[in-house]
Each structure stands twice: as structure tokens, then as C-alpha cells.
Image (spheres, rainbow, N blue to C red):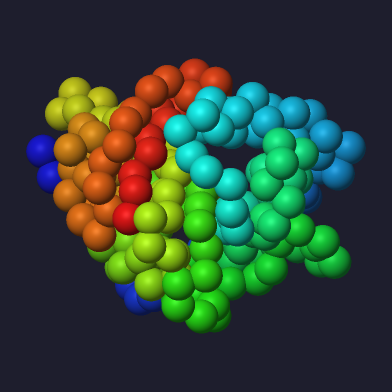
Length: 206
């Protein structure tokens, strides 16, 4: 079964759609987007990121699709002091996350030791994302992913997320092997259950 994609009329439409998520989440007062929920979100990410710690070395961290920056703070709290986030819409006056598109990042080559992302299902093109992550990451760097949205032929309801305007998933897959093929610039190290039961944690190395 091949990877499934949301159909956008253009790349600009994709960017416009994805940038709405934070603003709509705040407007609708969804907990994970609200300032008063931020510390709870940090604690959740600390548990999730801790499961990667024994397999990676310290270094400069970039969190992709980091929204308000809870995962950035979690990395810093766990000893990865040189951590920053990037998001298409980080909101106003974000201390932890800079605005940017993870398909076209305004970073120099070979500067990050660790790339973390839990939202590759929001990507326009996984192959393009992999090449861009490869460009900005150092030799022997780590790519840490948390992935969900495994689908199968019978999973009609989940596939519907790719056509709903109120949802932001833009790509889905049926098995890990499909993901591995998209990130061919990196070598698979291991996978294990995330501390968040919705996700599978995956470690790749450059």
C-alpha cells in the first residue's frame, strides 16, 4: 500500500492551510495550544524525549513543527541546552521557536546534531523534508521521529482526515518500511513505543 497524500492545488495552498492550525487552536481554546497548558505539555514531552536519551549524544537540537515550543523547553530541561524550534506559525513573541518552513530552512549546512519531529504527517513531501534535514545536520547526527497515522485498506475513517479542511494531516502511511524509504539519507537505528501511546518513536542516524 502506497503513501497517501492530501490533495492541494498548490504549495502555497498547503502552506496557508498548515499555518492556520495554531490560530484556530487558540481561538477554540484547545488545551495544548493555550499558555496555561504549556507546562503540562513540557512535562509530557520530557517523558517522551527521555526515552531517546540513552541512544543519542548531546549537541545542538532543532525541533521541527514545534508550535509554541514545549518540546524545545523539554530538551533544555533534559540537558540539551542548545535547542531551538522551527514552525510555520509559532505565534507572536515566541521565545523558543522561529518562523520557517521545514522543507526550505534558512539554516547553513551541517550545523545540527539532533533533529526532532513529531509531525511528519504534516509534510508536503517526505523526500524533500529528508533532503533538507540531511543538508542542515552534521555527520553522525541523529534524526528522532515520533510517528502515528498508520493506515490500512480497511481504515476508511482515518483516510478521511486527508480531505477534511479542519484537519491538518497531509500524508499517511501503512507501515514503517514506507517511512524508511522516504528518509533514505539516514540509516535506521531502532524503533520503540513512545511515552505517548499514540506514537511510535524512531531513531535514524546520518
